[in-house]
Structure formats: C-alpha cells, structure tokens
Image 1: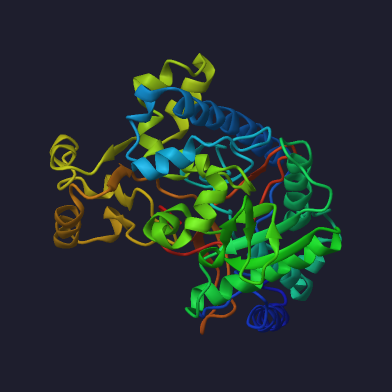
Image 2: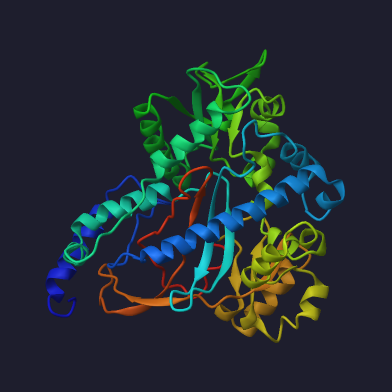
Length: 424
C-alpha cells in the first residue's frame, strides 16, 4: 500500500507532523514526532495485557502492604526516614496503587516480555497519547486500513478521573463538592511549562464532569487549622499528585504545607506516597528476594522469575561478581529513583572505555545494574526525516492500570529507533 502511493502517504505523514508541531504537548521545547503507522494489536493481545496487568497489580499491592506492616521488610528498601514515614500513611480509600503504567519489552512474535520500569508518580503521557491519536485523522494509511479493520483507542483522561473520584467518594472522608488540586513543581523551565498544557487538559475534563479543579505549585500550598489551601486561598480536598517523589524529597523544606496535610490525612492524595515502593527501581532487586518470595504464591513467584530482569545494587562487588566490565552488552545501568531517562546507560551503546568510566563513576551511588533486554523491533517509516524509508524500530509497550476500571490499555502509536530504551 505504501509503495503503491508513496507520495500521497508522504504528504499525509507531513500533515501529521504539522499537526503535532502545534499540539498542546511539548517536552523540553520538543514537539511530538510520530512514526507513520500506529502500533495496532489484536484483541487477543488486549486480553493478554489485561491478565498481565491484573497479576502484576496484585503482586505490587502485596509488596506495598507488606512494606507498610513489616519493619524487617522495610529494611530491604533504601528509603530515608522522611519517605518511610510518608509511605506508612493510609491512602484513605480502597487501594494502595490506584494508577500505574507498566513499561514492558513485549515481543509480538512470541508474547514473551520483560518489565522495563514501573511508573506511579502521576503516570504522564496521557496527553501525548491523546494527541498522537488525534494525528491519525491526517494519516492516509490509517484511513485506508479502517475500511477493513475496526480500531479502538482509549480515552485515558475520563477513565482516570471517573475511577479516581469513585475511589474518593467511597473513601474515608468524602465531601459533596470537593476541590481537586493538580500539583507539581511549576516554574519557568521549559519542561515544567510544557507540563502545564497537560494539566490544563485534565482541568477541563474535571470541570466537564462537574468537579472543581485547580492547578497549583506544590510549594505554594499552605496548611492552617486543618485546611490545605492554594496560594489563592482555595481549600483543597483532593490532590492529583504530579510532583514526583524524588523532587518532593529534594525540596522537602519547601513543601511543608503539603507534607503536614498529608500526614494529618486532611486531604485525599492520588497517588499516595506508598506507591514509591513500586516506582523506585530497587523494586526489581527486592522482588527477587527470599523475603518477597515468602509471601507471594508459587504462580506469582514464577511470573516474577520469568518477567523481571535480574537486578543488583551497582557496587564494586556486583561489578566483580557479574564480570560486568567484560560483559558490557549484557547490562544496563539506571539510577534507583530517576525519571525522563536521566542517568540511564546501556553497555551495548558504549565503548569499552565509556563503560568502564560509567561503572567507575556510579559504583556505590544509588544506582542499579540490570540485565539488558533486547527490545522487539518492527517495520515503520518516519516521514519527518530527510530520506524517509522503511526501517526496523524498537518497540516499548506501556499498559496502564487504573484501579477498578476496565484496566484500560495504553497503546502509544509511537515507536523509537534508539537502541537502548531502559528506563524510558
């Protein structure tokens, strides 16, 4: 189809690019760049993902609850006293993990997969997916395929808002007309200003459902007489937290209003701080620990052994035990609590000298070394390139778990050509 009408498809691909260059999504000053053909998967794969998500979510809730009630188990995690105290606070509703995105390396040919990372701090990319799906209206190839196939995407904003408010209304202390605050560290940096666009989309969707929503810098929240307020004086009853845990801990003294309200359970927090147990990449080491195996079922332990890559703390002992210097292509290095791919290095992308320097620099730092997973590749074309041609691209799949929903599955119509996707 593409070869028969290449010029027409290229023209539609450029229309997609023009649309994406003017969308509400932008990150660090860069707009979306999508490959031409969206990632489409059959219904049987959707059912496979649904089962995968339910099993994984069950395991993760067990781990979080064990952390909260077992002092010895807490010692396995590298958390500060301040964070451990916040993790222990009850969520106030029937879930310790109301939302998560499970990024996996999924092989379409074999249905085998390995986990890459777990995202729980607000789980962004929903606006990115919304705009990518909108861009398909300009895609001639997609329009032709809709004559022969029925395609379904997912309305992630409304799904999350519905389930979030349902959990709140059935929680410990709901009020009739709550104010929801979408909070983050909001400043003049390009990345934070870009995030505001997504927050405003959420705000509009909240308002359409009759829920008053505001956007607030987490540092501007004040807590007096049992009431959390924005800088404008609005009382806050529910927080949709987009401020990542690492940033909260880094600016701990600046967010004392937020911290005090959470400790007093004066607000209902989505997501609760206990999700850091899963979000932190040290999970990949603890999940293989005998202490975790002891409270998981045999089937869950088998699932973990098959699908969670072997992980160690990056120490001199680990480097020696794994012979990591001589076997660089087998390993990837990641910060325990990083995001946006900062500090992620795959040995396969490094020269011997670069790899040696990375191991030397990050040994004994809060960093892990993990089994490298060769990602699945599929054919696609990038019409924004100077010489577009069909190439093999790496796939990253991110099923999204929304508590008590249909476990909606996020299938981003975008793939990346980079060789290493660990941590992304």
